[in-house]
Image (cartoon, rainbow, N blue to C red):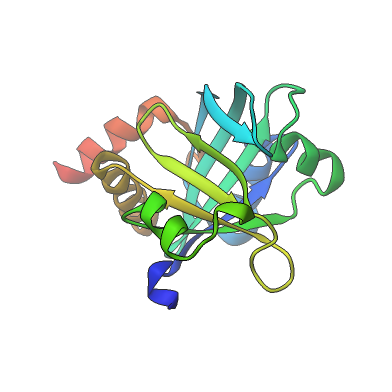
Length: 183
């Protein structure tokens, strides 16, 4: 039964300032480098209501665990705006990668547990299952396209070779760093 979900690959935190949170993660734990990007989610649904939102997201690795730091950039009603008001910086969710998101939801009859869903501009699809894990954290299920999966794997490889310098990097720099890693 648990094979449907796969292993936990990410811890997600909703923060008031993604840049500051990424610096703190790098300084305290050695996680990083963090790639910071602003994302507009036009295909975002929270509690059944479609709402376009903008987020600043920082991704980095702490060993083999991806750390995601999410900062809402507006006041739209969303899980993120509520979480940053109620529990900024606290662990919000775990995430697993899945091959067939819609099939998993149907097979496990989880549609009524979906708190929010969306599609990133890259084609990545996600849902959060509300308070799904023991202890009440959300479980994010991510169906990444091959390019996103390769980027995640590349970020993990970059983290293993990271010397601690330049802990915050732009999303555009990720392509350069991945090319340097391959070359």
